[in-house]
Amino acid sequence: MSTVFRKALRKVTIAGVAMVMLASPAGAQDVTIEQVMIPGPSLEGNLEGNAATRDIIVYLPPSYEADEERRYPVVYALHGYSSNNDAFRGDLARTDAVATAFAAGAQEMIVVMPDAQTLHNGSMYTASVTTGDWESYIAEDVVAYVDENYRTIPAREARGLAGHSMGGYGTLRIGMKRPDVFAALYAMSPCCLEPSRGVDPAMLKKLRAFEDPADTLELGFFERATLASAAAWSPNPENPPFYFDLPGDEDAVTDPVARWTANAPLAMADQYRSALMTYEAIAIDIGDEDWLLPGAKKMDEWLTLNGIEHEFEIYEGDHVNRVSEQFRDKVLPFFSDALRTE
Image (tube, rainbow, N blue to C red; front, side, top):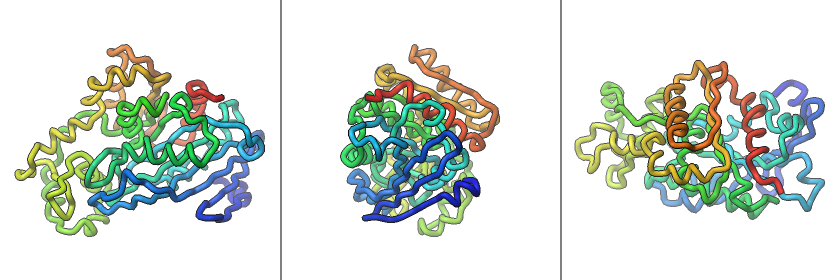
């Protein structure tokens, strides 16, 4: 956020709702941001101890307060691994992406950012006895709360799902499974699309040496991501204290690598072709210097091969340097065209 924006920031807390008024660039009207704690029944009882009551960040468009009769489409935006919704909001603030997109002509909509950070730094937006049922949390708990508490258009045709990196993976995964809830999908630099080829043996040996999950919190990005992947994709309720199986575990009932593979969208896609065919619009974008580019290209090829209409963009950039610009210039205009607005 620029110095001008920072000076214009006003924040108050009323009944558990943090409200932020952002002053926008010339030509853009103010967007109101609320941060609200909501219940997550789908997350209750998870073995990892992740909180079931969590916050969501809600962007309300400029006309929301003045036009009390108007209802709005909603875009649910999922953050990436090793991040949270606060960090995602901070990234979008770099270009004041939401307000600027509206000022440039995108239809006004509500934008909702759930928090999916877990013990091992990311839920993978997967249903797991270990981490919680994040698929249902997003598609049911969060959607139901937003529809009940904001002036939404409470219909599939007015809901979009988007996300960056792990959130892009979650967009495609949940999108495949819940076409009854969402009508359009936009995956930004999606991770984890290709079937697993296993994990480095030296890393696995290091990870197996830990006896307490709390001792793993200072591990590096890819080590913690491996733990998060196991918690999401190879959970084991009989294997405390981590409650998951790692690749190569001889006592695992089923091969963890096979289970990880089964959770890759490129492995799942054939089962959900008919679901993907029902979407009004699908888009994927990725930077030309992003290490995840090969998987995104394969997803594009699979969608094309199966006759599923979609947009695919390779832009100049890496994995993180254009998230705000793409959200402003591509994501919100995409949903402006794809979603029902009245």
